[in-house]
Image 1: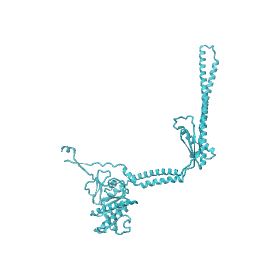
Image 2: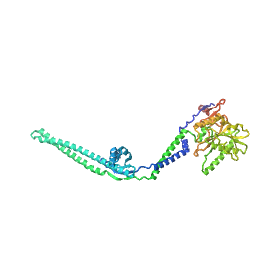
Image 3: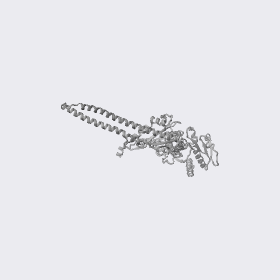
Image 4: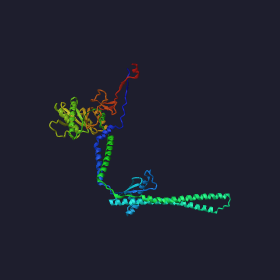
Length: 517
């Protein structure tokens, strides 16, 4: 039988894992909750410390000559724009007797069209009385300017019509003169010309009467428009409610702070690239997550569950240490305190079977500097690890944080359990930890995840590696985040090791052979 080997391509990893992003943002809830609370407090502070200036409001009914029922609001928007002109601002300041500049005064009032013919004017001042006076002056100046513009428009239209009438009147005079000079003895041609002159005179007379009537109507409609433009709501001060203003500003600040905090948390999660999900941590460390330990909580019922979880974790680690013929170490990443507590619990359980020594390789003095309690195991420094008796069981405790002396980790134990806080190390650093441990020929038994996300439903076990893959001194399986192809880290050369990808090759019978069979 002929076989052929093919390598299945690994599926491309997504550019953005939404599940991991949501989990990372949720884990940083302290950030965006603090930002939302800060925005709320800032909004309340602004409302209390920076109250709005005293203001007054008035409403003006504006009549337009070109008013139409289907007007989309163009005329009232024109009136609002005319209100913000130096001519009206200067007229209002003149009536107030104020030496302020119109350009500066225009920044202290505003207008808005409520309907097609209703204009609301709002003015502010140093006091309620000043604001009311400014609103009244602005309303009077706007009405006076509007009336003046309507009269000017009506006069211009009437003058244009009267000019047309006068021109026709002069032409009519010439026609009448031509008719008076005509002679009835002029023959048939003269009679025809005279008839055309009479027709022209009748036409001119009719047009002159029409222009005279239109000029009169142009002036007749103006008083109605002038009377329709008036102040319908007297200027009055606007009462500001501190509670309402504070509540409004607080809600606005809360929303803005929440949005800003969520944005910062999302961007920070993407930029930092710190795995949180079990599957990501297991893939980057090339080791399965074998246990979890929630973070401490002040709630009583959660404390009970955390104690039960610690007891199960200790029992699992005891079985791991008993079944190992080599020294076992606990290496932490972002959770030195939790690792020290786990190591002491483990040593207390093993102390009943024989002498146990805890080798402290943590930076600082978290273990060696603590005050011993009755029943605590012996804790020695890392420099005394080589001098310990082989008959004594020892548990090494160290760190794989940045700045670690990698060559010293082997003295703590040739097999290790990584204790990693979720979301603490970046993906690149987790890869570095896996490679350095492989270079030091330290086999990773598993990963204990500290403070996992409670809603994480991903699997932290590496399933796609070859069966019976060695995970001892010389090889460490590595899984790509995309899945589908597994690799192994092999020690190659004398004292030097490198990461090599060994694809799993599957035997397949060709189609021709299958048909032959």
